Length: 308
Image 1 (tube, rainbow, N blue to C red):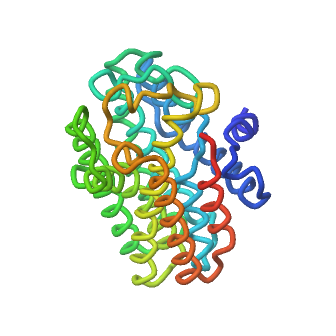
Image 2 (cartoon, rainbow, N blue to C red):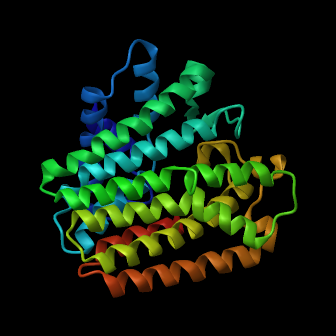
C-alpha cells in the first residue's frame, strides 16, 4: 500500500531523478507510518486527518527539507521528522484554505477536499490536529541526533512560518484583497507569506538538520522565500490556463473570485518573466551556499517545469 501511494505521488518534480524518487519513496513510508501510528483521533476525526495528510501530492516541501540537508553536507534521512512536520503544516493550510469560509474549493489533488468528504466541522478539526501533530513530530529530530538548540530553532522557525506573521497572515491578506485591484506589491506580500514562508522554512530546517553554519541556514531561508514567490506566480498562471484533470483542482477560480494574482497585477508576459528571473536567482544562491547543490538544484529546476 505504501509503495502504491509513493508511486501515485511521484510527479514531474521527481520523475526525472532516481535519487529524488528514492527520497520521495522513503519519505512516503516515513510519513505514512508516523501518521498511522501517532496521529489517531476518535472516529472520523482520525479518518479525516489521515485523508488530508496522506492524499497524493507533489511533496515539494518535504523534498526541499531532505535535499537541503544533503546539500549542506548532511545525511538526508536525518531530516525526515522535519520533512513530516512541514508536510503536515502544508496539509493543514490546504484543508483550511479549501473551507467554505475561505476559498470554498470542492477538489484538491484530484479528489474531494477534506470538508467535502467529512463535513466542515471535521475539516476544521483535522486541520487543527495536523498542525499540532507537526510540532510533535518536529521534536523527533532529537532522535536523529540533531542538537537540542537546533531543534528549538527549528520549532521557532516553523511556528513563525505557520502563524499570523506568515502563512495565516498571508491568508488573511489574500481574503482582504479579493475583489480589489491587484498591485504587484500587494501580491508579493501575500505570496511570500502564504507560500514563501513555508518553503523558506523547509530549506532552513534541512540546513539545521544537516549541521550547516548559522549564516548558511539564514541564506537558504531567504532563498526559499523567493522560491515560494516564484512558485506561486507559476501557480497563478496554471490556475488561469490549465484543466481540472491536469491541475487536480478547479481552474479559473482566481479570476472568478477576484483574487489578487501576479498575472492580474502585471500581466501574464511580465509574470512569466519575473518568475523566471527569480528562479535564476534562486539557483545562483543554492550553488553559492551549498556544498553539494546538485540534487537540490534538480528539484528546483523541476518546479519551474511543472504542470500542476
